[in-house]
Length: 97
Image 1 (tube, one colour):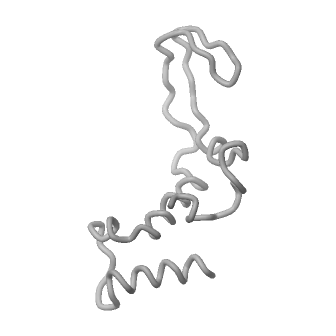
Image 2 (cartoon, rainbow, N blue to C red):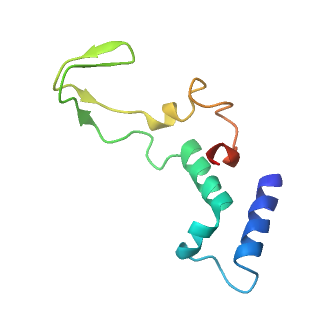
């Protein structure tokens, strides 16, 4: 797979073959960071964000929300919305370049 080959090439070139990756290495591995971001986009650890209470009247998705309304954000749905992401079901680390 092309994604795996690109990641392996980046890791071998910047880390080498004689040790494992450490947290401090991530800053020097941009393609691996893109893979992590894309993985979290498609598979968020929690599909819903913590509820928030609106501090003032607002509009969300065309609906009027009065002050004090509890709002929940569906991260899973937002990250798969074709209006926000091109081919949202595809795993494409390059979208974070």
